[in-house]
Length: 461
Image: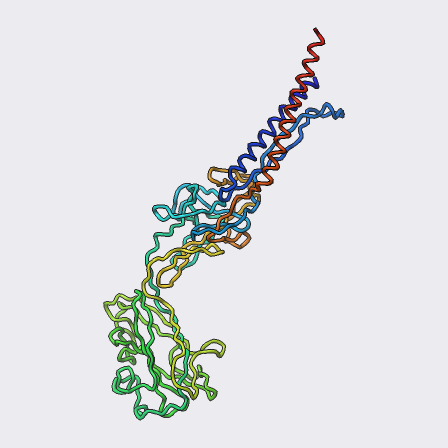
């Protein structure tokens, strides 16, 4: 009876080692496959019966393959901006078909991040799976729900049109000459009347400079900032900010000749600006073209221009005492004028950062976040079931999926990079030799048992 058991054990050895050979062969074949996770073969001893006779209890061996999904592969640089790798735990969420927000996709998970746009601009990897992400809301925020997969949509990088950005901030850094000779016309200055203000040209400013801002349509608008030293109050300057040409705007009562704001700027004895004593507004609110007749102190864009409302903050203070507007015994001038916004620009390309934000970059220098890529995590990633193309499906052994923001309890995303296979060729060849020897040894068990059975049969003869 033990001879037949030996034959069976030999067969078990052949079967187990041939299975191991299959796993090793697959690992070697995928040495250059992006994001491939190697299979490790674990051997387990079998027991035929519970007995104290150790020689009679052996049942051979079984082989079970385990994917080393959680093992990180080497991250290598790539040329495409849409090639990505995850440094750490987690997976890209992908689907077999492109989908939009509001539908519940049938998700798969992959580390193969060789994504590129298809004919519709949807990002798809080399295995044909579509990348999923959170699309930006109208206000630029993201609905980053960790369990609601219907908030995901296929990442599309070609549906973004050109963009212009209205100016919202203006800061001036410079100096006004403290020993400026007071103009004779300063005694009659009145910013609210065309006959006695700087915007109309009736009074010549002691110092005047032009600054350019951008409206909601990307149009370049020229504003002038004019200063006139006050005739009576020390360290005080009258200021007008007005449009050139004046026809670009329409002002309400108190604002004439294209003025957006008027007031005074007061300086301390040490040359720094006295914010509390100054009356020049700290912002320039401009109403939309179609907002009707502006009220007192208000201003709107010219009717028929089709321009949206915008507010431009005005900063003359600098930061922590550095920069801003000063009054010293030095020539009047602006050292720098900083204004945000931009004219119209076409889509230049996309970029992806470590937090998974996909940003559209335009020729005018504007960059806007259009998607955020989630990283799908599992409590036991090695329990996932493999699908074609280096993708995996959720199972009860893997645990429930959770969509996380990159870098927050999940791996970070490396752009222009790809994760290589985690196969170690030297280890695979070593295992290959070991399996080959074990297979040959198992075959010897069978031939030896066969010879012994043959001898047993000859006894009858």
